[in-house]
Image (cartoon, rainbow, N blue to C red; front, side, top):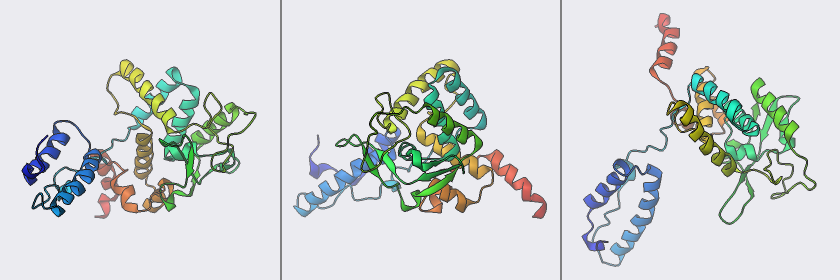
Length: 280
């Protein structure tokens, strides 16, 4: 509601700090605002309305990047959550969550799987595509997020059993829906159409409320991405080679694997240190 010429650099920075600290707005959301306001004010500079652009600064210098602060589930939290799902949840979604926890797949990659992508004999999953939904298109197939996203995942015994149950319960539609040339999607909704991320996200929001009513706020907000983060952290703590972990996660850069998705607390650091302490 203020005139453009009256906005100062300090006003812009303090507003972003307020949005983050007082209003709880995430760094990425503020970044969207910044990406709109900076060029708008730059045009005002070019039109000689103002002398300097008050939004011409690096956002991370003002608002700390918090989008990557994710909390992995502990072993006991994972076990309690899965037990709760077994007792109170939907069997189909229980298996989906077991698969995500045991593979680190993105939910769009999971729902992009077709029957031919799952090799039960050799215990392998071929990740080739993502199944997404956009505002303009209810179904669209795209390649994984990065070129490194095309990969082969090895199943654990728990993941293999979950896939067996999924395959045994999968209905056989009279006509298999084709999306961008792909057919035979593994996960179908009640209308026998392929599921997308929204289905799981809505389910997990509902089960979170039931879980908190039963146990209180004893776990962080659990989303499909928290499951992926938890898989990565579990694998890293188990001692898996970081390049192998990068491959399994489908990351193009190993720094993403280390800095974004792994969570190391003091107990983990102490345990690792004790392994090598005698050699120091």
